[in-house]
Length: 338
Ligand SMILES: *Cc1c(COP(=O)(O)O)cnc(C)c1O
Image (cartoon, rainbow, N blue to C red; front, side, top):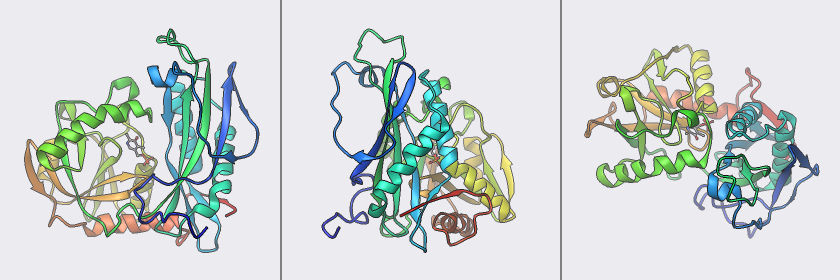
């Protein structure tokens, strides 16, 4: 134990628990042996479908150590359903919810003692890949696959304190395609990578906020919010972007705190004129304050450029639900033995 690397000093996602769970898909059926096994390398044929034709998707959720020593997986069932949705949109056989649930719970139990105390957590990565060794299957789904779960002990995403982000509003290049907006897939990430690297280089931006057709949707990996003393504003759901579980948590928590919730279209012009606070949401960073928005290549400081009180209030409320410091009115925690 003592010679394990410290998640608080390692880069996010670079450390791994020593166990994994795997279900194999063959002839339309998923088969799971029923327990975790040691984490080890896969061996694949060079023609493996996922490597050529992108038949792959993933999830990202977390388990947090509670004050009584147990672990709580946050919003397990919501992540399970989103994984099923992604796999279905890859036109692969959709696993039963209970199978994905068991793969996640068993992986978390097997890796539980890797979980650092808050603000650290165990980041959980369910993954699906199509494994058919067939480069002729360009226009066909893979007829075999692996559904597996690995875990990564992570420290505080904001090591050294919360640093407000600079976001660049991209109005020409879309994040992804209409049919893949709701799929949590590597394909979407690699599409967003070019614009993000360009905005980093040309504007010193941390993230790109995608807003083609005058319509702000989300960044490459997080959902987008405006907040002031009275209301929370975010883009209404449709198939064009990823429905973040954190987005949904933020909306419900803000409503519980008494904010008016406004889900509607948002334009870059409205963002440039906004006098309240701006933040991003996602499982990894939870709630990330934005200090500067670059609209039409012009930087606008948000408030005084520092994390605002409403953003921090929502962030605190969400964090205390993760760690068990607050009651669980929405039944979002699934307890597993640590
Ligand atoms: C995962 C992801 C998010 C955030 O979703 P959470 O469920 O809140 O972690 C947002 N946008 C994209 C594109 C994502 O892949």
